[in-house]
Image (tube, rainbow, N blue to C red; front, side, top):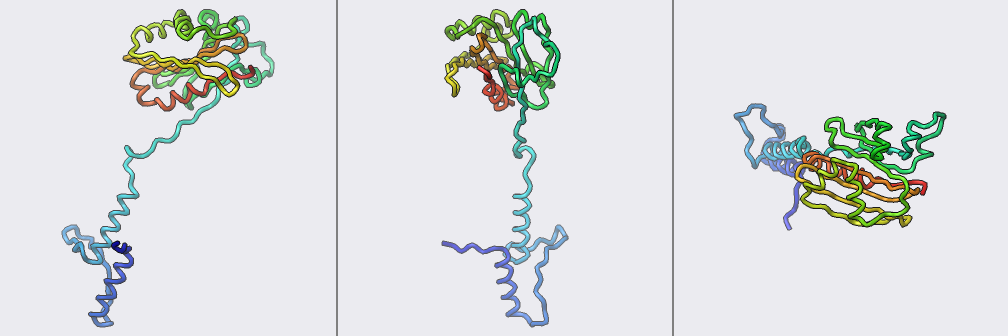
Length: 244
């Protein structure tokens, strides 16, 4: 096996060899020329030092395009799923965290859209957040009262589309629709849908709790989906009901 020599070892050996051949009054120096037209020979001590310096510079310099992007950060949203009649609450100091029926993560920088009382009463939208740079990249939750358990998966998705025009269009133009069942650590059943369309992508999670049906949507146009897929899957998987 070839022995590995560090630049300092090579320099010391070279200096020692020269010292043995030259008068003691002559000092041996390693010099890197500042003139671009005067390059040290590759085998010399100066050449080896220059090579080591160049290698260290290359390793220490990471092009911006190859640098890892900082991990996304999130905040937890606490949703109360209040009825349209109770929209806005009754005042007081009640904490949303204390009265929350569901939670999900929201990427830092995303903005909340105020849901109107009419919208809450017609299609059950309870909360919505979007990327301010591309408002069609968003997550929102709808709920319907009076559901104690989930119907078959196909029926649930079709019923959700009845009051959601965007979902109707996405289903109609979808290249692929997948659905799976999963249970959380408490045994609560969730339906998970993924809709892959030509121009958009959607992740949907549906469950029943508190005598209500909750549906959490994560939607994004194709370019944003390709760019932010990791973040979008994270917020999709963060949804769960609480207090049930």
